[in-house]
Image 1 (spheres, helix red, strand yellow):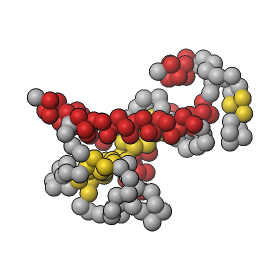
Image 2 (cartoon, rainbow, N blue to C red):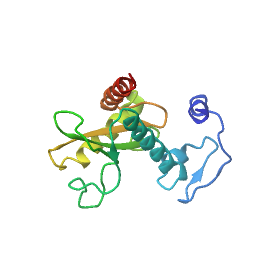
Image 3 (spheres, rainbow, N blue to C red):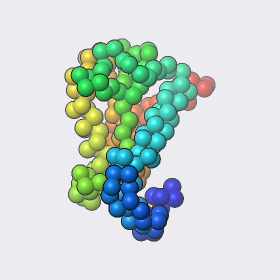
Length: 170
């Protein structure tokens, strides 16, 4: 929250330094949000992925992580979570989380035009990435921007998950 507010206000968030990748990081610290070698990048992804898995658990829906038969691509990449029981229409649900930064060069133009555009682009990239998964599975891309926006499909999914969590407690 501190970082998001600081970015919005244009405050200095860190001491200027050289990143692991060799790039210079200014006092605003934006590079830390977009660098593929920044330590916080994977931490944000894993924290969000764990949060979704805990949501499934609270809703009474068992999930698995790791090697998922029939879901691994030729390059070894695979979705983050898979429900072990059908989620909808007799199909299990695969979730794949991504955290993107609207300030990254690849997103900044679209993000300047429309709020949440970086999350929507990242979600569409996830759908393309897993276009060849088995038809017996549903895929839910969850794309969250570092500044807070969430893709539309994920908002609907998270609302559905929240409703299932509420029903499981009553």
